[in-house]
Length: 432
Image (cartoon, rainbow, N blue to C red):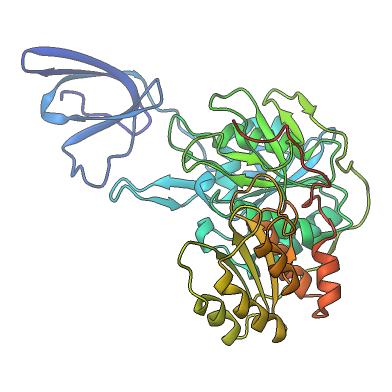
């Protein structure tokens, strides 16, 4: 390699000769990978992919354009506020949308601050005045109820202090749980609270992070006043969908359009260039009401999946350890093996609330059809209509934070506070 003045950021043409063949690559010089020990030159090609070229195989490197020097400027100086634009806060909590690949291990790590994430997508500063804040930087599997409370209080503070909307960046795996928690905790909400993540990290050419964030900021400036999740609406980069925070689920491990509204239709389609098409009329529109946080939650609640061969001791385990509520993911219409019914009756006698959802996801629980269901009803099990299991889990925590009275608990669980219960079964929502 003859060129000695190469710097990270230079745009170069690399000529490689190997086995009598010549290959030419053009791209930007990247920092070397930790495992390379200097034996490879790493460049980012125009298609966005990185390639490592053995130094010993390079015959020539031509500098097409030197890296442009970038002065050290503060975040605020880069994007001054524009009085004609709405104000949107981006609250960073971590996740893949704010992550990089560790090329030493191949693992994905939470790495970007909220400032780095926002600076990487400058388009959002043409949509709104952005105020980024890093609340914490965790992967979504480490999310817990105490963090839900922190997010809720920070969101309320930002909205009550004048922000027109808040975007919360979050890992996708548990994003639906946090969306549900905020839907119940943020009372009298009149402005958009948008949760967003990405399926692929920001340094990958196929990343969905930028478009998801752009569409989220657009939704956060719209005439909308609820908690919603905004993610890719299809595998390409055409539009995003806004899903109600209590009716959304991640349905695929890796597809960019992994999120779906369950037993419901999405609230809106959002195109990154600005168009928003609301797909329904029963959403709450923007108001100037002051937001209050109701974060009383009973954390001694568990979500239990029913499976063939499940033993009664599974229920006894939680009862004996002082849990106050269980949400069962029953089979079909909401069933358990008959041998669980005696321990469910014992749990109810000891004041433990038992709620029933279905692991089928689509459709709704109906405990009146078969004898097992009727026995469960007689044992005091609460059928949770068409609620998603994770939504019912979060809601039961919230309900038990307010009352232990069995009748009040039942009444609250069967009352729709944030659109978590669809009043009738829709036949246009089932995935085919």
